[in-house]
Image (cartoon, rainbow, N blue to C red; front, side, top):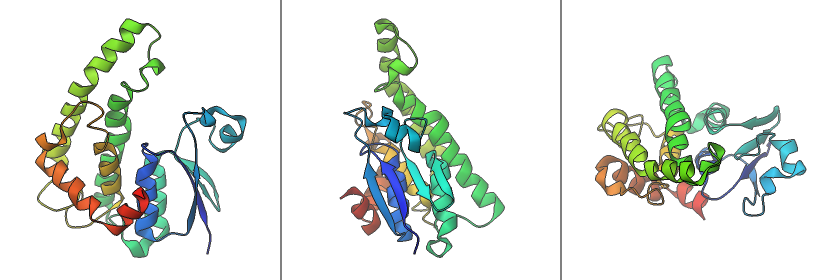
Length: 204
């Protein structure tokens, strides 16, 4: 059986990929990248991922980066786990949700811990950081009202890789100054996720 290698850092969106690998029961090994020691900027890691970010997944075909791509790879590589819809519309909806998390929600959050990516002046950085709670609240209001229906999971009755992704990013709300309990569906989703054995293994 081919072993995959996931480069990860605790507290990042790489957690969503760890959860997906556990759900798929995929043989894999983990390599922790120490952000505190700036390991992501070392020549050794940049040879793995020139972006200097996590996650990165080493596969038999090559290295993949970007969380939505890694989640799609895991879902399609282990179809027996049924971690993604197989119909065109369902798959597109999954990709739509992943794109929103990656391009909008993650960026809104990143303006707090990594505001220096967008500005150098302390006043500008502080202004961006003050806006994070409002922006994340607006993002999760949309998730609560538009993406979470009556089913227990993002895609309804079917558990998918989208659930680990949402769970991971929802976990950032507290540090962003947002009370997740103002979003009952998101909060309930988090509690359901915490009961899953694969999630518990990924968090251990």
